[in-house]
Image: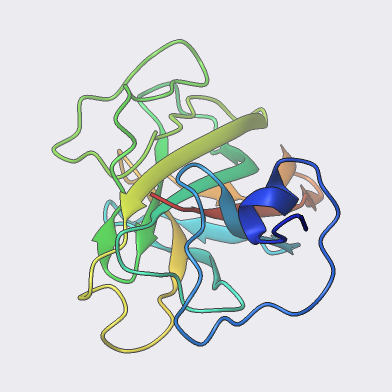
Length: 192
């Protein structure tokens, strides 16, 4: 009596040989990562705007599937003019929609800003010294997200009090400008 060789058998640790007929589609188990995209830039964005503006963007290599979850994490540095009040904020968007983080604002200097949005964890910077900021977001993909094709994810930045903030900067030095630093945006599509 022969042993049946199917994908369930292969997944259980047995050897599978032959071909797979995917004409009727394959289903990835929930919780498995479908694709990851990491984008790194060495770009400085300075702003006095109290509205979010683009610092960088990224796209997956393949259009994500409706119903799957996208988790986004950005890591960057920021400093601002030496004015001791409030600070700057960053957030992650999918197309023009903020990605809800589901957690509280991240305050790099021990303060949080009670903004009117929840566009991912917002890094608040309050001094001229560079701070490392992490912003996160997650969103379940809907048909509206992919109606124009592969969606674009943006890391956006703003200034809370109309001072000047510098994103992607390692340190602000008045006499000689500033030192640039890398900004990374990591996207993961997870099957649901």
